[in-house]
Structures are given as C-alpha cells and as structure tokens.
Amino acid sequence: MKLWGGRFEKATDHSVDDFHSSISFDQRLAEQDILGSIAHATMLGEQNIIPKADADQITSALALMLEEARAGKLTFSVDAEDIHMNMETILTERIGEAGKRLHTGRSRNDQVALDVRIYAKTAIEDAKNNLRALIDALLSIAKDNLVTVMPGYTHLQKAQPITLAHHMMAWIEMLLRDIERLNGAYERADSMPLGSGALAGTTYPLNRDRVRELLGFAKITNNSLDGVADRDFLLEYLSAASISMMHLSRFCEEVILWASAEFQFIELDDGFSTGSSIMPQKKNPDVAELIRGKTGRVYGDLMALLTAMKGLPLAYNKDMQEDKEAFFDAHDNWMKCLTTFTGMMKTARFRAEKMARSAEGGFTNATDAADYLVKKGLPFREAHEVVGKLVLHCIKENKALLDLTLAELKEFSPLFAEDVYEAISILTCVKERNIPGGPAPEAVKAAIANAEEHLARL
Ligand code: ARG
Image 1 (cartoon, protein in one colour):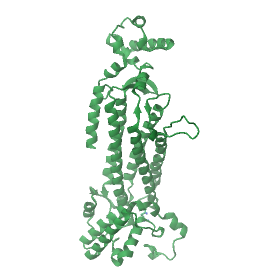
Image 2 (tube, protein in one colour):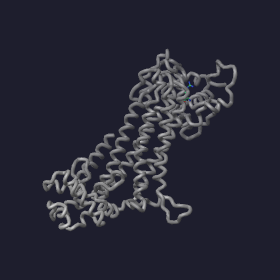
Image 3 (cartoon, protein in one colour):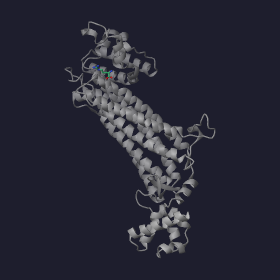
C-alpha cells in the first residue's frame, strides 16, 4: 500500500506507477534526503513534538542508512515512488512505530526543495573547483607566453598583434565571471525551506532556525508558498552552466581552428586527440568538438526547466519533478567538459614560431604604421588613408609593410623615416600597447596578478 493510500479505494494503475515514479533519478538525492531527515527528526525531538526516544531511534537508524546509501547498499523500489517515500518505507520497516513519526510537520514538497538545495550547493562547489583548476592551467600558459606574439582577430581576419598570454587572459576573465555567477546562485540556494510544509507551513512549533543550523544553511526561506515553488536557484545554476559552456564552446572552436593545418598554432597531445578509421594521417580534435556539441545539450536542460516552470500556478506542481534530470544532466556534462578541457589544455603544445610568423603577415601592424604617422604630426584620418594605400600596394607586390624600402615608403608619405622599422616591428606593436587591459607584457603581468588575487577572493 502507498504511504498516501488512505483515501484511495483502488490501486494505482501500473502504467502510472512507472510514469510518475522519480526513483530512477532522484535516488541521487539519497544522502541529502537522509541528512535532511536527521536534522528534522533531531529538531522534532528537541521541541518535544515527537518523543525524544523516538527521535533518537530515528536518527540512529538514519545514520546507518546514510552509511549504506554512501556504499550503494540501499535498494529502492518503484512502488515507493520517490526517494523520500523509499527512505521512509525503509526506515519504518526497520524501526516500526517511531519511523512513522518522522514525517510530522513536513511534506515531500518542502523535503524535495531541501534535498535539491543541499545538492545544488555541493554541485556549485564542484563547479567552482573545476573552473579554478582550468583557470590555474590557463594562468600557467599565460605566464609562459608573455612575449609569444600572435595575430589578434576580428571577423576572423588578422587585425592587430597580441600575445598568447593576453589571449589566455581574455578566457580567464570569462571563467572568473562564471565563478561569480555561481556565487550568486549559491547565495540563493543557501536558504532552508523545511517548515514550508506542503504549501502553508504547519501548526507544529517547528524550530526552523535550528534545522537551518544543523544543515549549515545561511538563512531560512521567507514564505511557505515560495519555499516549495521556487526553482530559481536551479535555473540560475543552469544559466551559469549554459554561459560557461558557451565560453568553453567558443574556446573549443578556437582550439579546433588552431589545430588545423591552416593555422598550426597548437598541437594537441595524442592523449587528447583521435584518429580516423579510414584516413591514416588524421589526428582530430574530437574532444574540443564534443565539448562544443555538449553545449547544445546543456542549453537544452536550461530551456527544459525554464519551460516546465513558466506556466505553473503556486505552489507545488508535479511538473517540478522534471527539474532533477535537467539539473543532473547539465551538471554531469558541464563537469566532464571542464575537466577534459583542462587536461587537453595542460598537455597542448603552443607553436610560438607559427604564431609569430602568422602575426607578421596580414598587415597586423597597419594601425601602428598609421599611429607612427600621427606621432609625426599627420591627422589620424589622413594617416589611415596613406597606410591603406600602402597596404594595397603591398598586396599587389606580395609584400609585408616591413619589406618595403624607405624610398618606397616615402613615396606614400615624406614623414616616414628610418625609425619606422622599429616602430612597426610586431614586438614593438605589442609592447607599445602598454595600457591597463592591453597586451603589452607589463600590462599582462599586472593582469595575471589581478586575476590571481581575484580568484583567491572568489
Ligand atoms: N518526487 C517529487 C518531486 O521530485 C517529490 C514531491 C512530490 N510531492 C507531491 N505532492 N507529489 O518533485
């Protein structure tokens, strides 16, 4: 018989049992469910809502169940529908009468809200740790490549020279914001909902603050309806996951380009590449591609929960049971992507010589040539025009700006002098951009120090 079977005359149709049972996926909340119940029972005993002896019996039985759950030794049944009723059933089978008092002043609605919040807090910590590990790996690439010049791009066309360090720091800034977003989600998840009951609180004198304290939450939820109906914290987690996956996906797109014969900026380690079953020469960036692919899946999880929530009247509705699979799927995939990506970046080899050669082509120093003329007194708009003509000339002659003789340069502007070669050398172009946030090695060194400090505070 169902734990809620009292008012029913017929058994649930078997197809419905199967359909609405969540045990196949919410058994992942086994530990969280038991921890919540231990805190609830402890408080019930302290408040004399249930006999102290019963509370003790419940908490010691639950402590044993916790160990068994951690060891994967508890078995669950679809008949008991979900993790909450499975746990109560097991408990009551073991200790009888006392077990039946556990659910006093509680509903599965506030219970599931609690379990998911506890899980979300740990998931957020995991995500932060994995992001930190990736940031550390990228910081070390940045530190090793302060003067590794490479072309910077806009529209995927060579634009201006930068350094590999500067490029890595751009990704690090994004990942630091990913952690900040998680901190926001954590703050919202860190609110203890027990005491909300099914929707309207309870008549028992529960000590909500004591349960909060026992479970290590920062605060209690403010409204019993909201306490059971709110899944914003999961949506925030999924949004943070989606944005971070978008970052990873963009980064992967670059890795894929950079690993191509056309770029040759990066050589992926054999351990993080795959071959072709037909083409013997192939070494494919499958890991990066799969991360790019999984990004769509994580977006899908966010969309699934946003859509599930959008039409729900207050308070709890069974639709909300759909939150868990989306959340777990996004979490598992994001974590796998982060750790695999970190491994791939840690073992990748950057081809500084190819990057430098590439930066020399494509007129990445054209802006600097114009700036050179500006410093000699020409208005920028005219300087832009002069250098544009120079570039057109070079394209026709198949030359770089630095290949032109001074006599050739002077045909375009008499302001050109011998010092132009130094002024528009690629390394100078980078070093001169010594502005906070810029690519000059000094500026990047400061950015690295700032990022490290920022990371330590997150
Ligand atoms: N398995 C349910 C869920 O995940 C637990 C809450 C069920 N509450 C209810 N009134 N049916 O949402």
